[in-house]
Length: 266
Length: 255
Image (cartoon, rainbow over all chains, first blue to last red):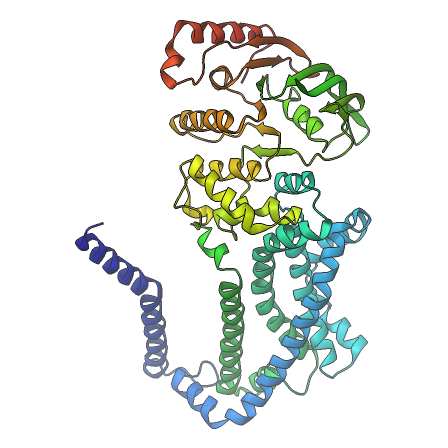
């Protein structure tokens, strides 16, 4: 490769980085500016749609109030999410190795995956009371089914011919698991984690909507009917940022843990 | 000397109440160091025969012997490769090749030297530390072949290893495989859909019928070795192809 083409390819890379990050950022910023201008010029009342600057002001001046409630939701989400991982992983290994479980529990799990878990939130609240427990359980439920189904798919679909080769060599089940099945399942597991972490946030908020006296969902529910819209929006924006940050965190862990899965896609 | 012997092997697959007769009364033997190809229409039980020889599958009726010993369960002295190279994307080429050694709990350092020699044998020196996605299809298949060789098995079972490659790469791989076979003197059972490939590589070609698979013809290929791509247009080569094609044609032919 000559120096010139190398330089050209560098320019290409910078260009594609601009396309990937800077353009969407500019678009988002432009949308916010447009929102701000329209609210003022069209004289939209604050109880209908507050301007971004007012929401930002609310976040700053009510930071301790908002961050306290956001932390409650964060706590519910993370607890539910971790519970889902801790229970789903061993169970999905058990399903992989047990024909009986594959024929009994697994089809039921697949069936339950399509049940809208948020719809049963009122019942969960009825069963577990008003505290944070029902929220954790709803966050757990939405994450659990996604994680177990994705991970089991990953464990089961490990290349059968390679497993045959290993069996010819007299491989123990533990060797096949550690050297083939488990690493093969990791991209599936992370895909499940990325889907379910944001679902867990939604699950916790739905739980708060049903009945609560704290949490980001409670702030939205308490502010909106009083037409305290800048407060409701402030909470929504903080929730969104938290949800995105959690997703990004899982994504970064994935990139560090299984870099080969990203490069192998090309 | 006879290394593989199949005696009246019949395989019936049972699934959900119905049964399929996949292979019927196959009796066959393969000599040590022999290169034998199996051709036949899709679903005729070619791959099933390889699984039977490997011990991964037990015949419903009949017996299999390797070096005079009855096969009962998976055989360590066998290397296998398939149409899909089945390389692990989280391992470099050399770590993929050394996977069998890890499973056998043998000394990795000793076999690393052997692996490097094998990389040289298939012209992949310099690619040891590459990941599978950095290699072309033909290169991946070469890695898969030397993974099958690393633990020095006596027998190689190859199930359409070049089926997914383009025509040019395929011819190149045929030359590579001939080189491996001549250097390592392994017994090779080779399943393929290509008559040309079978004639080019084999000492003997076995033709199977559509399901239930039985052996309907055998042809000794007496072209001198090493064979080169030019020989593919020689009259003898074409005679073999014509003869084998007509044998397949009797029962529906290849697809």
